[in-house]
Length: 212
Image (cartoon, rainbow, N blue to C red; front, side, top):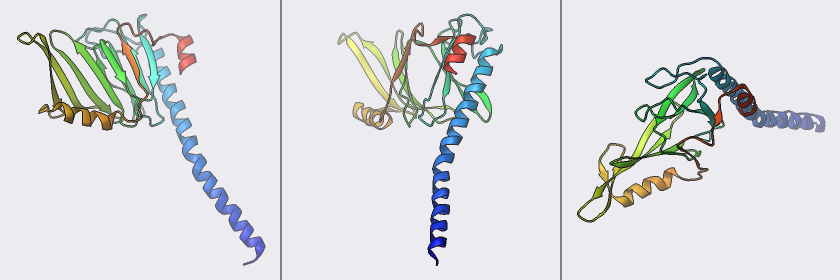
């Protein structure tokens, strides 16, 4: 093989490798732009929200924020509505699924923590007569429960009594519970949202332009 041919083959192979590297990045950037455009459209138009009472994206008290919940390069849409009851949950997760903005789940806004890691871990906690905390993961289409705890007051011993459960709602030991969480919490970058959602943005054209 001549020196010229070897150089030509080297150039061609180099171009193929470079293209392979660049294309996924370009596809990801395009996808993120497409998704944010869809969220912008959803928020700017009068779309009914998840609440049992009539509540819409264009209501004055609606807030939003976009976050990549499972670290796949594609953001999810968080929406907060003061009109929602505790039964409905004041904070909801929407996602871009099969070309549409889809409702995923909602949470009463006592405290919700998004771990923003590969497992897509989300922790929600509620404190009423009985307190409980759920750990679920976002798998790009829905939230899947992984484990949870519940707590009630032990009047005999004058202290809270915590019980731990797996996804099948069977009791497990505290050590087993911690082991499950250890795997799910890896490489986390936590974002917590609590009552009032002060770290979210009022849904208006200025904020949509800025954050989408």
